[in-house]
Image 1 (cartoon, helix red, strand yellow):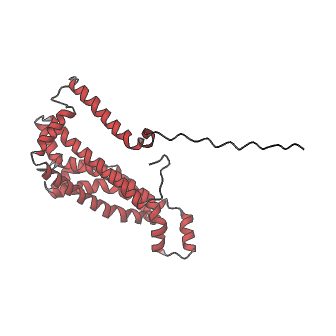
Image 2 (cartoon, rainbow, N blue to C red):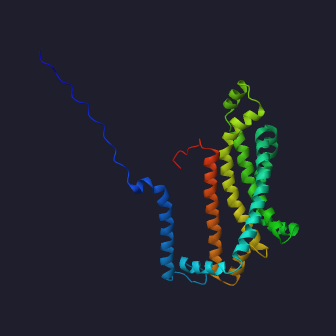
Image 3 (spheres, one colour):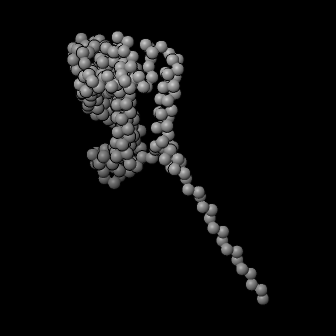
Length: 274
């Protein structure tokens, strides 16, 4: 009687280990993009493709930045930072509770949604001269500018976050005896966090625009005022250096917001990866 032997099971194919570039592309891709843009910008500037009176390239802008550091740059940053932070605190202090209130009550939502939409659609920056009349040339008018422009992204996103909370989860929580605070903490809060972070990102962008425009139009100190002063005398390198300072500050703040989001909502995983 002959015996047949079973063939040995084939070993599973081993996937090749990803290269260093593949594993770290999240880190090097943005760096490579920025370096490439600055390299092309520098080359174009050295080829004199534009009038240096009206535009500059990175090496010359760096010289303008060094010139700014010898002046009142830190004082201007301090003033702009105070105006921005106080304005954002007011915007969050109003936008978060009002957004939750409008999202929770359907009657309040029906009553005030058209008003919120109309105010959000209004070009608020045209009211900057009015803010100066009301609050003067000091930091008050800039704080008001930031607060007015930043409050609506927060308010609208909080409102929509509450309204988009899964009602079946709320009913399940109530069936297990959860009270109002427990439902807010365990059901509504996790649902609202992504909306809050999105609103905060939008509000920061709006707030940056508001504080710089406010200082540009009517101020005696601050980064916006410094940008205007350099632009008026065609000191283009310093003027663009001031603009890039605000860009860098905005990027740093946005990176910190992403860290905050991962702390507040560690369960949230983007569809295309983070």
